Image (cartoon, rainbow, N blue to C red; front, side, top):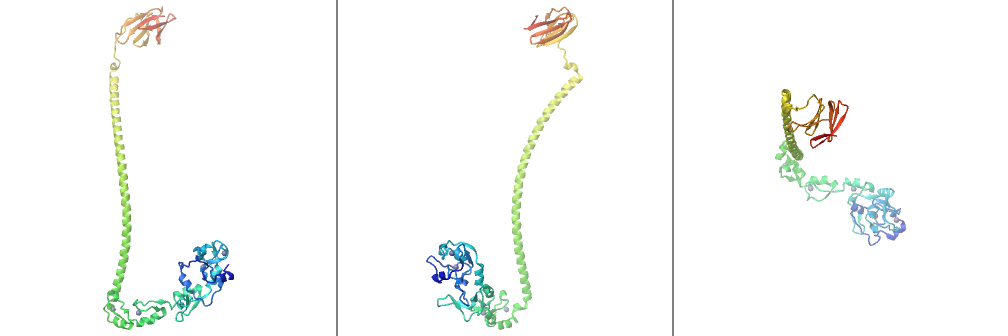
Length: 383
Ligand SMILES: [Zn+2]
Ligand SMILES: [Zn+2]
Ligand SMILES: [Zn+2]
Ligand SMILES: [Zn+2]
Ligand SMILES: [Zn+2]
């Protein structure tokens, strides 16, 4: 799992081959390099790739453990230095990580870079505390040996946090709390107390404070209103875009409706015209037929010639055939002359029935016979 003692001896604490490039690009690398342990940690807790204490130890597919950044950074060409296997992270080595977290180290404000080969050593004037590596960061956040700056003047020397209070008593750069209103007083804390009793801004500080508060509120309101205006503007833009689109759509629809309407009106007009025509025609014919039947059935002529009553009639083209009690059939011209063109004799009884088919005329008589005559070029001859 961890580097075997043999492998460790072989490699020592030095990089394993020429391709090894040390980078401190990963987060917190500097503070990791600056660790000063109270007792030298076990060699088993050192990474064979970077020769440092494991940072975020990971078990690889071949079963060995290396820092996460050593595996992902393709140190040693991505090959395990023990068995030359391809390095591939499997899972975090929580046991080793926990072991490392339990190691005691000096607070970073209790160490300093050394001159004799080791990167860092204990600083006798710094923070004397030693903490577990897992608790180091939390301690350092409020370590009283952490460096800090004088708030009065950046030119004052860098101080330890625990010395700040003492420094502020003596610092000659204390400003009047009303310096933002252009009070130019600068002096020690004691001088400041004295100055405040006569500072012209101190007398009206209640008013100034109130004014400042109102101003801040006003600024906040302005910012809020600005945001609201921005929002409304964008809404307005969207709305006007929408309205424009609707207007275009409406215009299009209106034009379409107008065209349809005009077409419809034209159609109705022509229909109404036709109806009017029909109506007046009907009216005319109605008037004529209702009040003057003789206008409809005009007498065109009278056929005279039979010697007895006429029993039957039959029409072929412009010819009318008539059968009579006088035992004859007469052929009449119905187009121009209205005269008898021919008289067919042959029956010995009254001619009672006539009919035509093609160019043949059939006549039935009281004498119990039917005579068939051919009608050819106006001359009719019995067959
Ligand atoms: Zn490593
Ligand atoms: Zn391996
Ligand atoms: Zn400390
Ligand atoms: Zn100062
Ligand atoms: Zn003042």
